[in-house]
Structures are given as structure tokens and as C-alpha cells.
Amino acid sequence: MFSHVMIGANDIEESKKFYDAALNVLGHSEGKVDPKGRCFYRSSTGVFGLTKPLNGDAATGANGGTIGFLAASAEEVDAWHAAGLANGGTAVEDPPGIRELPTSGQLYLAYLLDPAGNKVCAMHRPAK
View 1 (cartoon, rainbow, N blue to C red):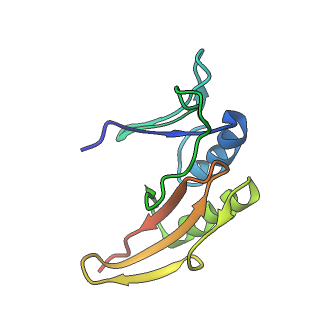
View 2 (spheres, rainbow, N blue to C red; view 1 turned 45 degrees about the vertical axis):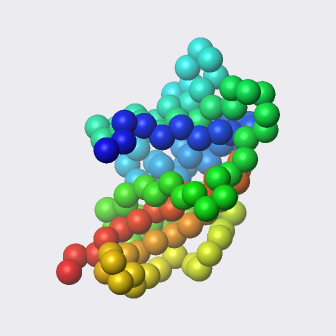
């Protein structure tokens, strides 16, 4: 459904450090900065990008918005959370763990705010 997700960042290098560490534990390579100063993470399923807002205003997190990254295991979710915290992320919501959702069943989730205040999540769907 999605070709890419682009989010705003006030300091590309600070946000890149956070995402390089957090996404590395999910099996993704370091982000690449293009000549315009934007940072991109490419995979076979899509692209995730960081950019300074084009209108010149400060980047802010989307109130109510969350970007979720797939993880292969609960341990990978925990490693993602730890790597994010160690690289400028802020813990939000409950600690990493199982959430029982009536529409989705059991999910193992962890949430962080990135350095620009964007809410991100790592999710593993345990086998039934």
C-alpha cells in the first residue's frame, strides 16, 4: 500500500544516529544521505526517509501519529527499544511487551519518540 514514509527532522545527523541504531537491530542498513541532506533507508518493501521541513518551519511529531516497524521476534523488539534509547530516543507508553488487541490479537510492541518527537514503534506478531 505504501511506497515510502517521510518524516521531518530538525537535525538530520541526530535523527540518523537514532534510526541507524534502532533500524540496524531490525536488519536494515545504515541510512544514506543524499545531496539535498535528506536521509533514506531502503528495503525490498519500501523506503523510510528523514528531511528538514521544506517550508523552513521546525519539524514536529504528528500528534496521534505512529510509524511502526516490523520485527522478527520479541527479542528484536527489545533490542530495537534499547538501541533507540541509547541513541537519543525517549520511552513512551508502557514498557515493551505483549498487548492484547480485540481486532489484532496478541502483539509484542515497544514505543519511542525519536529525537524530533515522532512516535515510532517496533512490532512483532507472535505465532498463534
